Amino acid sequence: QVQLVESGGGLVQPGGSLRLSCTTSLSTSLYYDIAWFRQAPGKVRDGIACINSGDGNVLHADSVKDRFTISRDNASKNTVYLQMDNLKPEDTARYYCAITKPRAYGDQCYIWTPTSYDYWGQGTQVTVSS
Picture 1: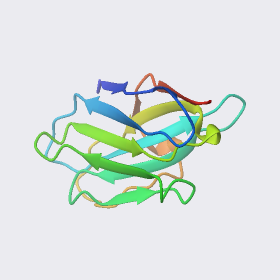
Picture 2: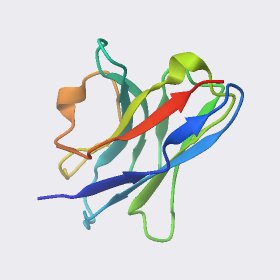
Picture 3: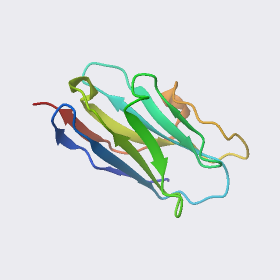
């Protein structure tokens, strides 16, 4: 069972920044994707950004493309970050880290279907409010 641990959430004022971290126990030379999703009360879970373990190809949702950036620790490749700048009240949600099972090929990740991801963290709450 792959473990995922998120951290870095909290309360921030509009316009502020947070950096979320996700550390995985997965260790493999195969391809996999790590993504951030978020879910606000009463809303569906939306994909925010993802990164592929191969060349580090990334994808960001249009809604956050100019404000959020996904990256990884290139030394360990076990930790992925989500830098969130210029936060808005509508960014308030619980943020989840998720990872796919390892596979033999595929160097591009996608965030359109949460069910494509096999393991999930417990989430970390982000609240943007003055």
